[in-house]
Every structure is written in structure tokens, then in C-alpha cells.
Length: 134
Image 1: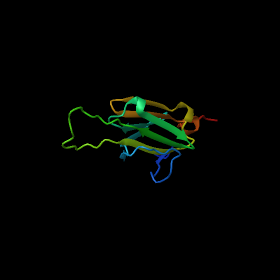
Image 2: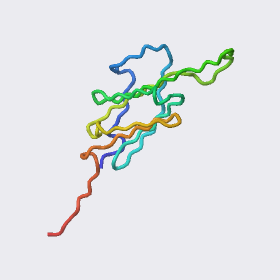
Image 3: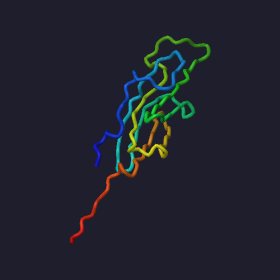
């Protein structure tokens, strides 16, 4: 069985991604929990304020990139007096190996949490080998 976390490694943000943003806003790294079972690796990314229509997930050259944009709320006839929470976009990248079945990756969004299911390919799944007597 492969060690947990060996299939996916965090990619440093200094490495250029093929897409560039043109928005002049802060970009946050969403906190991500990574869990694994025999069939898949599951990523849970906290992206508060991001709607499912504002998420862009791209898998290119074994790099899975998550982009989420947040539209700031402006209240008419009010001005901001004090803010503790900064509004910005979210971006995170992961390197995905061939142990993941790239064609079956699924994504769902609920209550500001993005859930990515990365199914393991047949080679990456644990296999029980039975022993027979001769």
C-alpha cells in the first residue's frame, strides 16, 4: 500500500501556472484537508463566499489548480467603518501523479467547502493476494 500523501504534493505558488489573473485583489491559499481511503483521495478546501459558478478547476500537465473568486458585497448608502475579514480570491495548486484516474475526478461545493474526489487508478489501489497451498 502506498503511503498517505505520496500521490499528491503541494506545489509552491512561485511556480508559474499557465493562467494569470488580472484582478487586483488579494489571493488567499484556502486551507485544505486531504483524506484517503482505498478508492480515492479526497480534498476538502474551505473557500467561504465562493459560489459554485465562481470556481475554476483545471488539470493541466499533472497540476490541479483550484481558482475561486469572491464577489465583494457593497451595501448601498453605507461605507465600511471597520473590517476584520478581507475579501479576496482563492487559489491552490497540487501535483497529481498517474496514480489518480484523471478522467474521473469529481467536484462538489456546499456551504463554502469544495470537495474534490480524486479516484485512484487500478494500479494505485491496494490488492489482496491470496495464498494457496501446493
